[in-house]
Image (cartoon, rainbow, N blue to C red; front, side):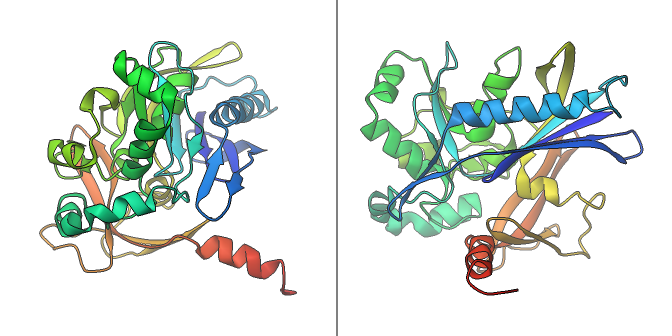
Length: 312
């Protein structure tokens, strides 16, 4: 079987699929979110790691999978959430600062004069929901992060990168393109960090994970007595685009979670339309598939809010 792991805003999940794509077992572990006012939204990074470990163990211990070999694993995570950690030990230096967090919105306003250039380079709008302003806040306000930066022992980047470093035996410091592209520091054309963007936000390349393709030998996931090779890492919305097989240009895909997302494979040579975002769905040695994406960040939360107040 193949083990699919998903770390989302409300829960971590693990699903085991057989080689024909049929679900054999599933596990679900809720996770907490803390809020302070309207702008500060955090999660406990250690809880996120542990929740994935528990979900993976439960799926692998199920009756349908217990006697089967695990061929490989993949990880999808919430995008734009970031963590800073100590490179040498893996110890988290900050909370997981959620994609919903807007604590550095006021600082970000000073970059409005270059917002158009940032959109041209990244395919995104200038927004505190993305990772760069959160990383800047950590560098400016968290003493432990500042000390680690001075000693060249800082790793900082997407939540996926932190989870890989803590879940896998090899403790890699790597970033896949789907999650890296939601930092405002990544060039989706070259599939690497952009030095001009790093300069704009004042983030050192040496503190960031190394960029690798979606399909990559990330390392090995220990689950009980099993040692499962993790062969893919991506963002939740990029993974969702493959729910019914390889995505096609002729089909638009809608996914609703905490937010709502509409995606369609980006046609070759077509300029990014106004109001849409550019996403990386997948990359490997053969190239990359990108999409045009429409996002309503609070749609799912708004539906939950309404459902709690109206009998539906």
